[in-house]
Length: 388
Ligand SMILES: Cc1cc2nc3c(=O)[nH]c(=O)nc-3n(C[C@H](O)[C@H](O)[C@H](O)COP(=O)(O)OP(=O)(O)OC[C@H]3O[C@@H](n4cnc5c(N)ncnc54)[C@H](O)[C@@H]3O)c2cc1C
Image (cartoon, rainbow, N blue to C red; front, side, top):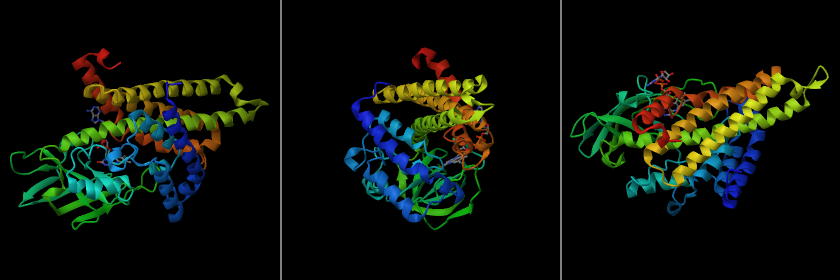
């Protein structure tokens, strides 16, 4: 099915059996604020690396996997089958960085990220700027051969485990005043502090604190690319992350459907398995049908990227993949909670955890409304048939 080659199937199988090793740790993570014992965490990270499932998206010549986009999707899909972000050990370092990084940045950040020695975080969103990234008020002021960075960033995912942050700001002076620039800030650094770490709906060991950058002085060599380039990097990261979010949603939905079908076959009510009740059949059938549709969409998008589709096609199809797969997964999780009945409301139940965890997939990396706006703008501009 899906025209997967033997190599694709091998990658998929390798990722699936690794995630099957992680699933038994979900309830322990849920009960412990997302944390696993340090030695278990270290062992699972090492195993992901050893199996070639970390940095599948990074260039081979730098030590990455150099996988096709479809194979990256297959790996992240499996990662999405585990709750509590346990699948995040299948790390995808910033693949947009190597083509624009200086040799020093490659050595200090890209290569260690590929080896899973350093993790990154993204400090872009602010109190007044989420969907509209251009509304950021963080600043970068040139001072000799340094820049001074100021700004308060929200929802900085993985700050608690990151070794460096991508900080996006607007330039205060020079030819590019008012435009965006992206900087790499080592963590910890003088002037960088956590304002607070709010609790979120999911239970994972990657926190999303509000982080203040106050007169943080970085050498000009910490800028990525050139002044004015910042927005382009953010867009590239969003595009990539959108198809990865979509892939993980496929995995979450597939796991939910498998576990729920198994439960429903064995749950006897009024002397009958509940799979004999039309209302339950409808929920199962709709879920499987929508998963199939989403999977075809996401895989076709990945294949189009591998085949070198034009950038607007990639951009629009990634938005469609994220929009449909995240909304599909949300519907599936809701139905699965319902099919599990009271058990579906217990934290020890897979459907309860996915029901909470999948909600954010419709918000981060661009909300569903923003994806719809991107798709509609593109279809009006270039014609619907360009994209389907
Ligand atoms: C758990 C979590 C982790 C995150 N991690 C990171 C991170 O690591 N780094 C980072 O920089 N950011 C991160 N984010 C931020 C995330 O990308 C933003 O929350 C998201 O882009 C939405 O922005 P907002 O929250 O400011 O909502 P807003 O932009 O204020 O949107 C509010 C509402 O208005 C709607 N809306 C906005 N614009 C439009 C429009 N044009 N048309 C129609 N409706 C619209 C939205 O869809 C939404 O319903 C994270 C967020 C969460 C929840």
